[in-house]
Image (cartoon, rainbow, N blue to C red; front, side, top):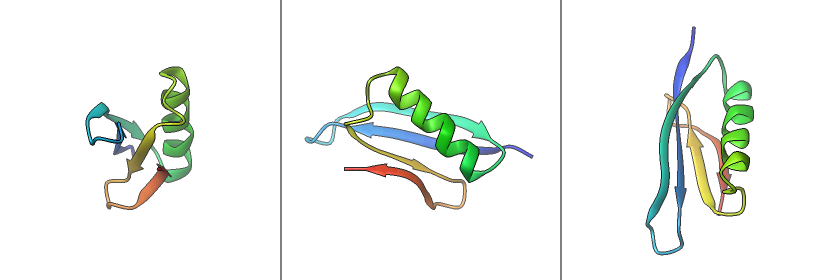
Length: 62
């Protein structure tokens, strides 16, 4: 069963640069997918978070 995860990237002033949902079977796969999405868009060094459907943080960088 796939779950919907939310990936958000912010500028220091709070402006959202990315606000996307994606599906993954578990938190481990969601972390891998989220990391790849961030790398593909050159957002790895930006403030970002990826949350699970239960609200837990899968990825976080400030």
